[in-house]
Structures are given as structure tokens and as C-alpha cells.
Length: 340
Image 1 (cartoon, rainbow, N blue to C red):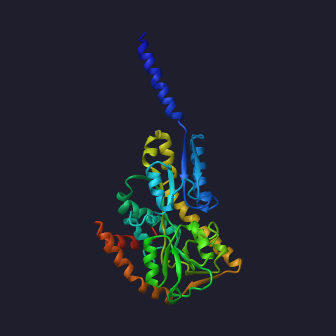
Image 2 (image 1 turned 120 degrees about the vertical axis):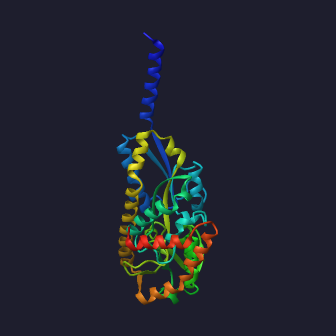
Image 3 (image 1 turned 180 degrees about the vertical axis):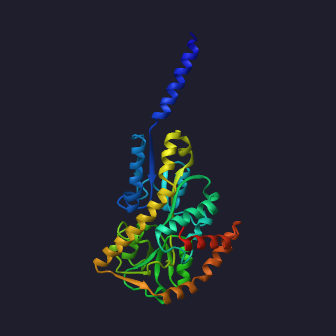
């Protein structure tokens, strides 16, 4: 009997068994409170599903509200550098770092979360993979479009923006607001409510999903948006990114579980959740006595004309980084128009 062969076989069997039994805990970081729908309705159920599929070998530890330190703009680096294993963030928070994906934040691109998120995922696959090559990309989605939330003044059409100081989330959103006559102020979502309460800003551009988690509901009385099925003046692109080395270190069966539960599947869940929460939030906000104004078709056309220059300026800016801005805008508008 060849004892060396038996011993070697035993070592290989032990290694294989160890790989099969490997357990991992994903550190997941984001910028909203733990009660936010993103964690409660998408990320936590995703973790639960992975746990079930892996016989509890995949677990998650959440770090909401920037508990790992830093600002939302630093989340992309935190996951790249392994401070977190997974993050949910807006690429546009890191101004100019991911230019190709910004096309979906251009004026009047996004009319809802479901259709635009599917379109964005396809756009990412066709036009923006290179700028996210340092990550394992799990999902992209939009916030469904940003309504205007103000404390003291109703925004009824283009003239309503004049002189208003509003929080904006991205540089494209800031350009759009400026073109509409408002004054953009950049700040993380967590600071917005206090800034409105103190009169530092008059309100915020923001997705309906943010209204209750950030307590905007307590400091704003007026809300304005386009009619259903009409694109919003601006939107935010959001993404779930995983540390590439963490993903590559997983055994094949756990990688397969991550792949099965992310991508198009996760994109669809985010889109459906954001639309569902938007509808519910609007009902709740109206029930508490706040006023929701709907922009007329004429007012939307006036806003579109006022923001025409934003597309052109963006195309020129990304052109300086070697991108064909006009081609990217055309691709994004075609994908959102078809809703795919």
C-alpha cells in the first residue's frame, strides 16, 4: 500500500471539504438608516435568500448610515479597498469619477424606477462596464426620478425654481437645477432635514423613497412632480458593488449563489420596490396634509427647453475624458424610451 498516496488523498479531501464548508459574512455598508426600504425590502431579503440557498454559509452584517465612517462619496473606495464587502451607493456622489453612467441622470431621462432600472442595467452592460472594472457589480438601478420637496414655497412650474436653494445629490442634478433657475447645494441625505429646519436650504430634490427615512416628511409641506408616465427633471443612479477580491475568494458554489441572486434579478427588485414605496409615500404624505403639485405638460415643455444646454455641456465634459457623449445620450434615451 502506498501510504503517501493515501495521505495525499486525505489532504485533498480535507481541503475540498473545507472549501465546501466555507462560511462567509458580507459586511454591507450604505448611507441611509437601517429602517430605509433599501435595506428592509431588498438587501436584507437578498441576504436571507443567500443564507437559505447556502445552508446558512452566507451571512450579512449591515453597517447603515455610514457606520464604517466617511461620507457617501467614499463608499465606492470603501468597497474597492475592502473596508466593506458590499456597498449600496450613488456613483454620482463621487463627482466625475464614473462619467459614462451619469447619462441616466440627465434631464427628463427617468419616468419611473422599474423601466428605467432595466434600461440602465442594459446601458451599463453595453456602455459603462469599463469604468466599473475594479468591482464586482451586483446591480444598477435608478431612484425613479427626483421630486421637489420644499418647506415654505410651492413649486408650480419653471418660474417656481427661481432662487430656491435645494439640496442636489449629483453634479448632473446640480447643473439641471441651475438651468431651471434654482441654487444647488450639495450635501448627504442625512444632513438635509436639519438644513431645511435651519433655513440653510429651502428644500431638496429627492426620490420619494427618501422622504420618511430621512424625515423630510417632518420639515417639508410642498412636493412637486411630473404627471405619471412623464420623465422627471433629474434622477439619481444607484448601484450595489462588491469587493472584487472578496467575490473571487469565494468557493464556486457560493459564487453561483451570489450570481443567481443579483444582476437582472436584483435590478428588478430595486425597481419594483422604489415604485411601490413612491406610490405609498405619496398617499401617506397627502394624508398628513401636505400638498403635491403635478407639473402640467406645458410646464414640463418649458423646463425641457430650459435644460437643453445640460445635455450638450455634459457631452462636452465627458468628451474630454475620451467618451462619445452624444452617442451615450442617444443610447440612454433610446433605452428609456423603449422601457427596456
